[in-house]
Length: 504
Image 1 (tube, one colour):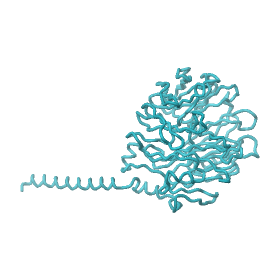
Image 2 (spheres, helix red, strand yellow):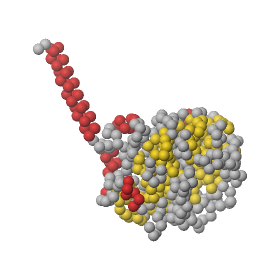
Image 3 (cartoon, one colour):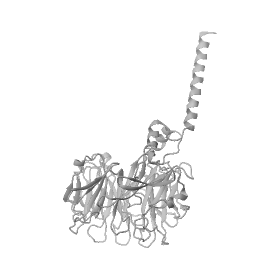
Image 4 (cartoon, one colour):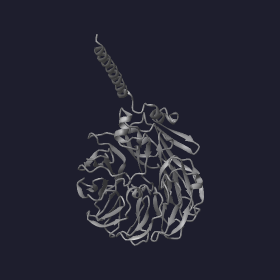
């Protein structure tokens, strides 16, 4: 055999062996259950010693009773038996149209036809061609599906459903990279699309007291559209690039004239505007964006204040500003730095501690603790709650609102919990193990969908980050709670949580 022939034969053998090994690896990867690599396996096994043998069990920890659900055994028919769960709509990560993956956060639960029964709205996929769907309350079947829309802009807006015309006819608004879409909630037909309105959405009585308008934050530019989709005004902050990065934007009628004011926050700016776009004030000393903007009579003087974080989120330097809403004048500062906060995440503002004047600020450090501060910034209590987002609502029907805590993480014990103003936990539930994606190859999943392996419970609905309301008139809050992995492609559940009467 010539040397060249031997060399070629050697190459063929090596390539053949490599191909065989590659095929075995691919076959092994295809057989492997999702997540069965070292990092993901750790996530799946965390807290699994707490997982009940049966479908669910009522356990206990330092703070009281806690419901723990075995997600490997629970079925759709079982959810009605779980304490604190009023309704559950399990949704497959990939369902129906190929490439269309349900995202539990982009959803809303609201009665739009006056039959006394809530209707469910959801978005399918973050990609171009996404659709909005309306589902029936009882069985989750599809009532209608919208035409294909643009790719999702982000999840800050959730899925607003409002009566824009003031005539008892609801519309669904969807924020996409191709503009803001307005869809008839009865028929699923597109009413209008503002193609230059690409960004986060808020809805309110900005232009008049009957109809509601839509404000869209597109980078550093605000655009307002009336109920028919006609552009009413534009305001350019001149913020660009990283300075225009933002999460929060809200609205509130702070002076009682029947028209809402607007309070957007960016990385380098917090401001107040009238509903007609007139600038009230600007805080251009903002150092890092706030993960919350809220409003209420914080100090009990009879006037509404606006509250935001001056240097928040991962900067975690604060302080929290309490300001006059029409001037931006600082009335109080709440310094959370001495608590060792690593990531300033979210607040719930309410009258949680009845003995004190004014409102309390329930403040959560991402995934670690909840702190309750009084109106003057004094720490009332601290609890080791794995919360990432907060809201409030009357959980037990006693006329007072409680703190609702929504968790983030792998197999978190106490993914959702309810806390009274004195630091007593009224309810908690765990889902073990957390839902995870169904792709056979973890690396490919992360490349295509950005999966994080972290399950997330969130306050659902467009305004659910501030308050969860009573949907059926029984005096108890119906807590909309999307739950699943943070990104697309995992099996998820849209929950309606509610405390049951003691007699149940």
